[in-house]
Image (cartoon, rainbow, N blue to C red; front, side, top):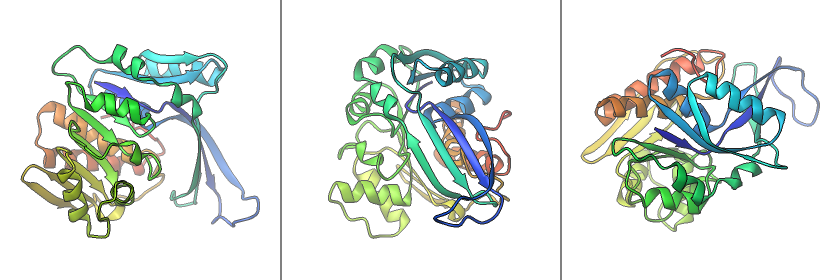
Length: 288
C-alpha cells in the first residue's frame, strides 16, 4: 500500500471549560503525529498491511522526528521528500471538554512540494498493490493517480480540498467524504447538491467513482457501490477525542478490502475502528 498526502505534526488543545470566543481559554495540550495520509498509513501498519508514505516535510526538527517515529511505527518513509528551507506541516486542533472540535488550523504549504514526478517514482510496481491519496495533494497529482493502473482510494479531507478531484471520477476505486464535502464537490462542478445522502452518494457514483463512503457522524455512513446502497448506523461510542476518527474509518475499511471482504462488511469494520478510536486518547489506535 502506498499512502500519498499529508504528514503533519499535530497540536491538540482541549479546553478545561466550554470555550468562549474572543478571549483566552485555559486548556491542556499534547503534541502528536498527524496528517490524513500518515494517519491512514499508521493505522494500516497496525492492522498488518505493508505500507509506505509519500509526502513532504521540511528540513527541520519536527520533520526529522516525524520521519523517525513513522519508521518506528512500521511505515516506509523512503518516498518522503525532505525540502530544504521549508517548514514541516502543522495542524492545531482546539477541542471542547467533551472532545468535539471547535476549530482547526492547518499550515501545510510544504505539501505543495509533492509533485507528479514524486508520485511516478513512488508508484508501486506490484499489480496487487493499492494507492491511497488524500486531498492535500494537488489536482495534478490526483489526476495522475487516477490515470494509472492500480486501485485508488481518495479521502476528501475538507470542503476546500475535495474540489481537487476532477469532474470525471473514473479510475477512483473508493471515495471517502462527508455530506458537506460531497455537496462542495458537486456544487463546484455544477451538479445538484440539495438532495438526501443516498442521492448524493449516487451522484458521486454516476460521476465515475466505483464506490463511496459518505460519512455522517452520529448518523452513520452511506455505503454505495455497484448494486449497493446501504445506510449503516453509527457504532455506539462515548467520545473522548474525535481526532483521527475519519482516518481510522477509511483505513479500517481499506484493510478489510485488501483482506478480501465485501464493501459493506469492510465499511462496518472501518466504523468499528473509528468508534474505538474516538473512545481513546489516541489519534491512531496502537493495536488492531
